[in-house]
Length: 398
Image (tube, rainbow, N blue to C red; front, side, top):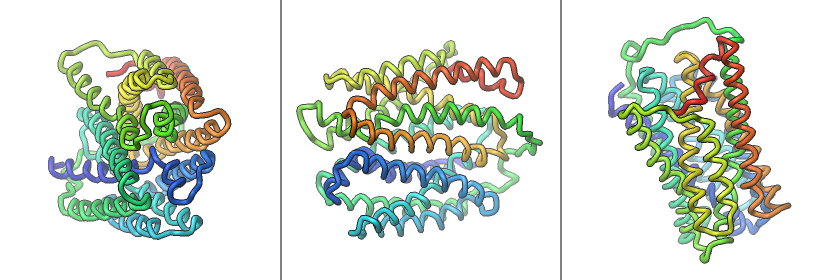
């Protein structure tokens, strides 16, 4: 795999994450401005529905990728996503907007295939570095997306975001079309070991899915209404400032990447992942403070810990899977992640509606504590069962 091919493949992820993140912190503002809907439960339902569509459609794309190469498949799916993005922009009827935007998310889900596709082309020794890099790319895509969304909602009609999403989709089409010419041939790719996989050897993937579901539910519970919460406690209601504070975890991801690189070169002892869970719980709890400086400190701690946990859990997937099963196993874990985000989005709306903007932070802290307990129990169980041996390594973070 050439360096140019890898960089452009990662660029596809950047464009996808950027467009997906534009409205994510601002759906309450978007629905209020465009459709005059201010019900938090309604907004939470919409975000949950979009997560549900991605959750259901990605395993379908993973199945289709067994018969159609990933890059040509992405060309066609992103053309469709761009068309429905444009349709969402022109939709004046709420029902038509729902249909167009959900169809857009269904086709956008295909870009998740880039992750296992890239990992299948990488040598095992490069997995940690590649996962960490992709995690930073996703975080910085979220930064640019959130900032772009803040500027769009400040200066343009809310629906203009969907035109920018369409532009991103069509850009991905051209990049993927070019990548088809650069794609490594089968004899250039790392050899794929065909293994006989039994149901018992797949159990670690399902165990990982359980941890992922609980963790993603807890970590993403504070996301839908964080911008609104920040505006309620800060001295200004600036959307742009809210988008900057929302994006702090992405900046912390870059810092964590540099720190992780330094640790590897200095051969430092690994950090216990359960300790990192304690840090992320503290970071979430600090964000419930009415003092905006404390919220910023909590946001920094949350972002640093979030990056470490996500990288380690993602790495574990590729430790318990095999290259010929990457897309299939990634779709299973992604299903659990999306289910966690879906439940978080829906529950966030209900919690805010019934108890205000602070309660999601405390529920998230409790959920993260449960996630840490699940991880500890599963790693303890793995010491007694050979098929689960890799799971024990999750309690140590690089």
